Amino acid sequence: MRMSDELLTIDDMDVDGWRVLLRADLNVPLTLVPAGVPVGVADDTRIRAALPTIEELCRRGARLVLVSHLGRPDGPDPAWSMQPVANRLGRLTGAPVRLAPGVIGTEVRELTRCLQPGQTLMLENVRFEAGETRNDPRLAGALAELADVYVDDAFASAHQGHASTSGVAHLLPSAAGRLMAREVNALRAVVDDPARRLVAVLGGARLGEKNGVVRRFLELADVVCIGGGMCFPFLAALGHHVGQSLCSREDVGRARTALNAAAGSTDRLVLPDDLQLVRWGSGDGVVRDSLDGVDVPNGWMGLDIGARTAERYAEAVLTAATVFWNGPMGRFELPQFARGTRVVAQAVASTSATTVVGGGDTVEAVRQFGLEESVSHVSTGGQAMLEFLEGRELPGVEVLRRKARDRVQRADGPGPDPNGPAGHRTLTPGPSGRS
Ligand code: 3PG
Image (cartoon, rainbow, N blue to C red; front, side, top):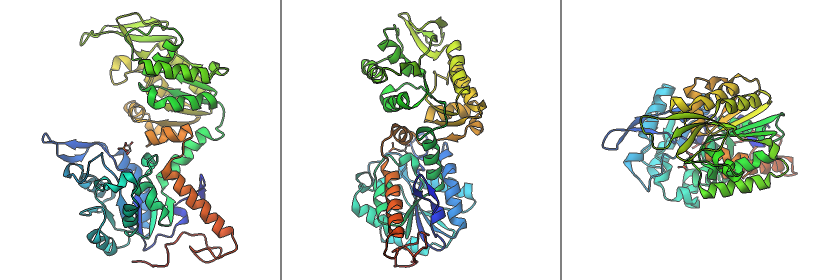
């Protein structure tokens, strides 16, 4: 059995001729016409990330039933149809992808039965079904009727225990797709016995969302460099003036709690010692200044780490054997405040360490600087990645782990393995046969 973080993968699964329900995260941004009707896919990164699994399963003779959510529709809504996604996937694979008229039901089931090996049917947006986010067992059961085996490649949705990410996995022989396995392996390499030194660079504006990750890395990493809007609550908690910089009272409380929890290891926490400021309210005639120090005067706001801090963070990255980076160091979309993020990105791209980068803005920054190819792993997971690194159980991963454990116990136990002849460890569907 080839394990990936104790997960079974599609290497362990016989798919030839079987209907495979593949859960991918194809929740992509859409391009809208003025009437608000989606006409196309604005960024197909997530579709491309799912391609290795889709193409491999098709090559191996699977009859593929693809399911994903798109946006957060409140019931069926043509504005959130999967049609633009099906069109783009068809263009990328060079084979048309038919869109089912719904998610479940008799007609959809018939369409899955008519699928030929190597063909793909995409289901409509699974969030058109109210039971999806409630993990309704009836919806999970109806999804299970559409296939013989289940493959989960939706790492970016794995933090949610929904019918298509968790419920259905309990009902069918299940395995991880290539992307799911790659994400889990890459993130485990950061938190489970990482090669030392482990350096984390954490930024972005919302400390509330990243508090758990900051605290975990303060326990785990050798160095934690904090930048972006998130540094101001820490600076305020240490008694510095932050002027008009982003800094809510709640975040200062969070920073204080993190600092207290890290007492004894605060030498691992590295904060800026210089900043790039903007005059508050200077509008288009942006007034900038460099601050040697971190006490921001009233009427000014910090929008980037300073040049010296950027060099220190880059040096920390270059001393590491494992690097995790999440969150920009400043407002990098404004060229005059992009330096901190660019210097960190260049260090991450140039080191021979294992480098893992994640989070929408960070990935966007790495791409903007043309450095994506030089990073070991660019995660597709936002919240899912943060929760995994915090050490929280992700329902979509847990169910796959549990199924793998159950299977090992059955195969090692005295009775015959219900999924195959004794000693045969390839996952096959139940007794109903190919339908
Ligand atoms: C994401 O984009 O983070 C995932 O697809 C989950 O989407 P959601 O936040 O709408 O559940």
